Image 1 (cartoon, rainbow, N blue to C red):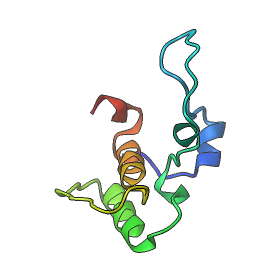
Image 2: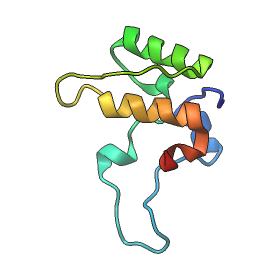
Image 3: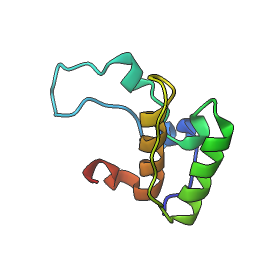
Image 4: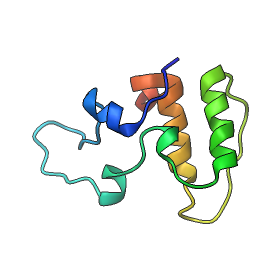
Length: 93
């Protein structure tokens, strides 16, 4: 299990947004480049984020259905949770 840390700490440790493929001229969209990396970085819906932090800490992932309007952070929340549960292997899951 990966210990939770903020994006500032993650950036110092080499965790950052990057385009896939070496030597590519592809630029990441702004929303992908500045997407929160850890659950601590997500702003809003504190109750749900606290529940996800408990899941990340315990490592016990139940079945989850996340629903809501576009743009409320569903994908970002799950990507942060996956990164905390799986570490660098989250892209392979």
